[in-house]
Length: 438
Picture 1 (cartoon, helix red, strand yellow):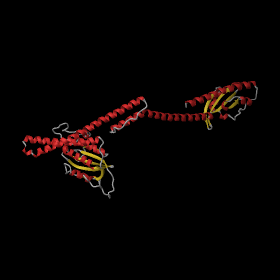
Picture 2 (cartoon, one colour):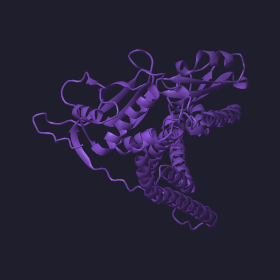
Picture 3 (spheres, rainbow, N blue to C red):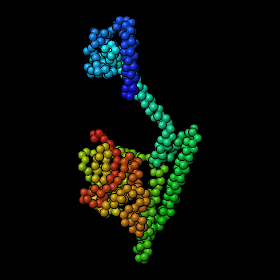
Picture 4 (cartoon, rainbow, N blue to C red):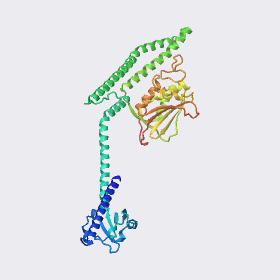
């Protein structure tokens, strides 16, 4: 807009200057009476073919382009009649125009020129469109080139971030590609060396836990046989020896459970676990799991119509449910019920108890390994578990594409509700489901 206004002003300035020159020539020629007025008007140079009009005070208006007195703006002519040179830009039906006038006192006449701005405005409009198109094209091209080069420059950083996410998820085979840039090559090499060192350390820890667990099995079997002999002769022992035998038996049971859980966890960490999946009806499966647990009287209920079907590894799911029931028995006096419900395309198995509940601060931590919340945390004399049961439940849920959490939403407003959420499946109820084989 500023450039357009400047160009119009320059055009109008040239028109005014040319008009003054024409007026001076006209004054000189008429005084010399060297030619007729039409010939003089025709010989005057006109900017962009401007139209001219001469209005003598005592004669007829003279024009070679058909310009008449009605074409002159009234306010412009009023200024010229007063002896002042004036100009005005206006808009007509045919487009913009610029009119200028001056009084020639020597011949008692008014001289006007009108310059059409239509071609100039059209040229400016075309130029404006070209500039806008060029600006838009340059902006798009600049943005595209900027995005391309920024992507190329940030690609190593993006790859490193993605590799870090994969490693955090447990994929220790992830590596960064070698780079030709010396600085990036050093970063890539250091990153890959770090991942390799981390994988080696984790593998050593896993092998150590697995080897220790395996090595402990033989002495544990010997201890178990010895304790069994002592328990058979318990009645022959003095009271102090009986108490010692009872303590030894309880600790041995905890030790055996710990070794079994450590072996299971070492297999999970090593990625050596393959699910043996079956399709089965959930309610019947849960009733059989409860019947074989330490609390066989826990009711299994649901409000859902029809059969509820899962596909998964029954042995591992049985262990997960048994661990939840055992956890409720140890810390809440036993489970009050197992409630099954649908949530979208997933099934939720809720193990509910009416115990003291789980503190909100511990509801995530209790699924960590060797974590025991509550009053027995860190106290061997009253501890009821080894802190691996719930972590194994979380691992089994993850293997099945599900999750586990605990909240306090029980029917009585107290206690805890452990929710095991697993992907459900839709089946044709006219077909036969596989028999349960626990």
